[in-house]
Length: 315
Image 1 (spheres, rainbow, N blue to C red):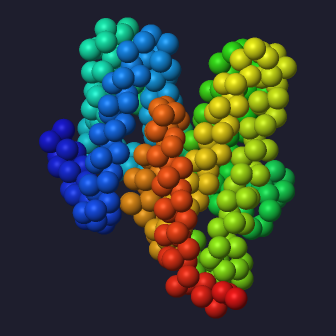
Image 2: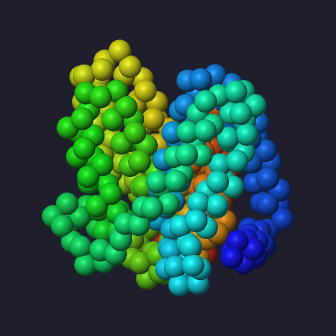
């Protein structure tokens, strides 16, 4: 059973490597090496190791809630939850190993915390959901309309709970983290060509519209929570502010990654890989300058890629 799943994952990995190409594979491998070194260094102290463990568990929770292969695993394997646990443990081994080398207690909590996560099985099929909140989203923010329809019962409860528990030190930072990671997923799937052309904008104008709208809507979620945090815990105001800056950077980065690898009606494996690496900067802030550099590179790549579709609107 485990061998069969491992074989499937290896085939998927090989397919993904072929799709992103040799140069990008080498580049991604270098980034992963840099991230691994940074994790090892930052896991030396108790405070950073605890934050690292909690952030990793939050990321795995989001993966568990979003993964779309649960039906496949249930249909073809006798114990799908155990298989998912094996996968998460394999992902956690590098971080747990770093924590063990530094003799940090959170290493055990990291592995134990994976057990309840595999039991999360939230149904997220809300294709007909169309609340007043969604109707107030601007029509050009199609990613937010579709994304909120799928994750309405994650985003709204998390935001509401954070508002009423904002006097707890960890409530707002955790909520901003979940909301930030959730909104990054809105740009996974590329829109059809007719939708792209409907904006009647050239490549640079479209990218400006998309990034501006993404920052506006994410700010509407995050800024009220930050304000409440500052009211109740003013001495630690810099924690949610730093999160906000990081996630604003990631919002722009994610939009540009999507259009750098834009293919109509497709979900790019390369784009998912680079967005996943970008999400690591939430856990390892020193990785953020690399994301800023990549943002400039992906902007140029996005413009060149979109020009083939939007050339008629270039002035």
